[in-house]
Length: 403
Image (cartoon, rainbow, N blue to C red; front, side, top):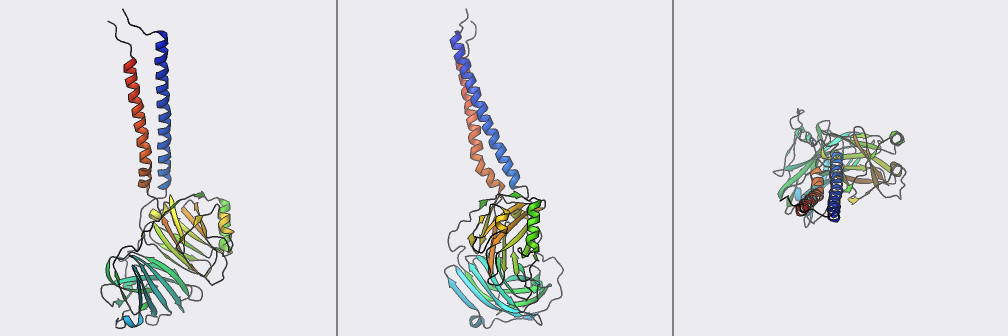
């Protein structure tokens, strides 16, 4: 004799089975959406990526004939002003012409913990000419000036049509210990200006002076359209955009549209860029254009970005027209446009004289995966739990076998 369920009991079992199946479908849809969102974001953040650090090391290139001048450091304590404040150090130099080269100026090396920034002011130099800046970390208090130092630079800049420049270059970090620091400015592969005295001594005792967080913002990238191209071209023609910087895997070049401005650029790391721009006091609003090619390494993967203006973080603009129509009372801002060759960053500068703009990109596809991993794992665990519960329920309510 068979032990059969009543019709009511069969309906209850069927209802529970349908509810369990519906729960699995809903969880599966949620999991599918999470995976799709993750893969879409991963694809977006890595679409431009082609890790290839800027080739600062050009020591393999053919060296030009050297012009050597031996500088002794007998008067460091007399002519080099050194100030210290905790983990902060400043070294001040004069800039002297090498041989018959033109120009003179002043320079200051600012050290905060292990971070280095070089401020340079040049006058009576060659007009509208590209110069490189090399910060030299010498093992002794003197070094021989030669064109060998022109091959690998900390950064480079373009003088104005009056042979002047006021630039800020961000250099690589220093190690803890004692250093003799100096600098050489080169043009055309030959030394033009050298620090006087040739070096100043500084002792680094700590890596950081204070704890800082470098928060980045998610980039709202807009696809550039024909109107955007026309507006940018018009801004270049009117010199509202006075300079353009192009960053690729091998170099960072400066195109000077308005020769009244001087511009410098340096790349402290693969995912950062430093650009300074200087113009006459009282000059009205301008926009700096930075082109980043697809092969520019981590800097080209703009999933998130931090842009600072004279050390202060600035926000994204809502549109290109907001950047191009700003006034002297508008706050600094930036916008990112996606192009066929990479991305364009346009930074609005309300007024002058000299400003430092720093970019820090944070693509980190692995970080994106780590951030999404808890959601994915939780979803898998939920599906597994429901499947196990359904199996046990089915086993519990299964009809007994015939005797």
